[in-house]
Length: 166
Picture 1: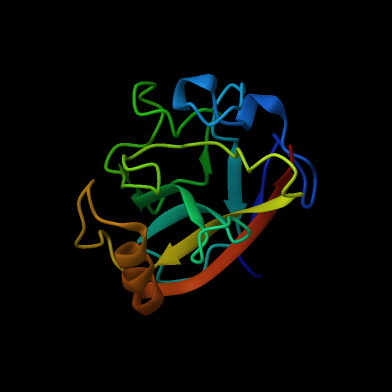
Picture 2: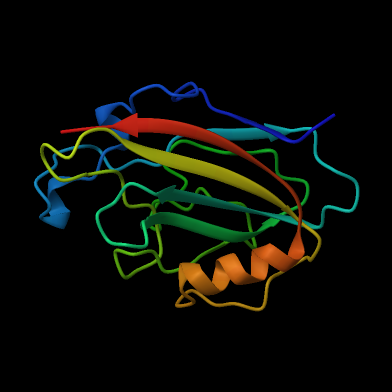
């Protein structure tokens, strides 16, 4: 059975609800709740020692996309992340999980907020089954370095894509 990713917050290809959109606090012109969606996975491959989760917008007008959320070192017995687990102040991540720096410049979930009139952007949530207990990174490690580490340490991955436009 292949690794699969699902959510009670949205289905594949659906528009993300305002609860998950970037809050006004960030100054980008959006007024959402900035809560990371619920995510659950199943079909875990043998040899999985931890998980990583990310949210990436390949449509951002940056030349390199935009990383909205990166979590690594999620314990192997974890099968879901609760709604708002990406809030560093909520304490909802499993013990040992580590949020690392996003393109907002700090660890934690930063919701979608594409430029007005830019059309719908895709927000690709990915769960990675990792063959190491912990990646050799810290909270300030960039998403690019995390991606490099995951490239060489992922057994399998699954995605779930939401959309949003302004």
